[in-house]
Image: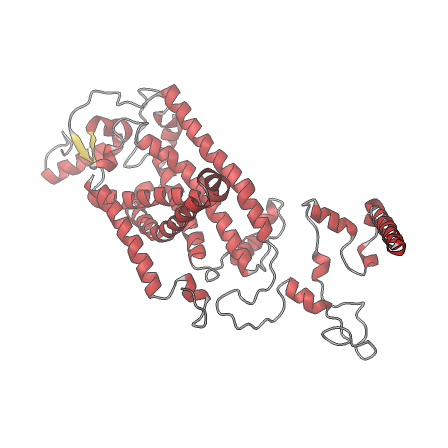
Length: 406
Length: 41
């Protein structure tokens, strides 16, 4: 019995001495990597624990200088006398030639280490700044409404109506708009599920909501893409910038003051910015969305990064060359991150569009409601377009332009 | 407003058709990432 106590005391003392001996990071941190046989230094480990970036380039270098020569080495490792460091290195950095019975893409990647970075980005900056962007946009629109009020039709209403958008144009707009709102809401449900919805409604309720959201998000996306193609075909020709846009921009479109109505054709400069924003962000979100819909089948970031590197753009802004050797999972992580970043920008822009197309401006919703707008509204916001319509009506009827078509 | 409601109905129809069509074409995640030896149901 006393011997056991003595042994325990001895062991405790020994371990404590060892622990104190190890607790000298300043001393060990100075040891260069070569002196640790190419392994990580204590400084590396401490930096990793603190979440600081660690340069592990040295670990990816093949050819172990310390490997014992084959014939003379003892038969200790799976590869006999040969060092198996390179085998583990190849597995760790996805360089090994892996054969697997498991079907499906990316099953031959045994290790990928970017998942935690992606998760932390998704739950951290992405959710935080995304929420700030949407919240900030709503606050800005509310302030604009309080300061400017509803933008009224300044002149006397005529009671005459002009057909602004035909049935197919409105159908294309609404299939895009309706699907976008549904995709936005279901996307936010997916992103903020763990941090907001589960604490609020519980896991059981959220599970049902998440499954439903995923189905809707995946399948409604096709309607969005159809709507996007339709508006691109129908409206690109009307959204080519012209000199009138400069006048419109110079006076802020008259949005901030009464009785200022810069000339515009079918679409003014503000609407053109929305249109091109929808095209660029819509195409980008569709491509990244397709990459997510068909996992591992449509990798696009390695190719995109290679093109950007060739153009020298990342180097120009001080990023250095972007990685072009990406694991399939990294491609998916980047697709998701990009999809969400674009989505937040898209939603912020569309919130402003929804505001001006509904409560923000008198008479604006009619254009996409039944397609007909008050003639005075059209003259104030699209004066050149009204003239074009009058000239076209006159040419059709063979009379001088007098009144626009009802 | 007819065009708007028609677009909303079309969105629903497209969603159901996409789900049905992609499953029929073998594009479900289950079809893509598992084999006949895996019992999923």
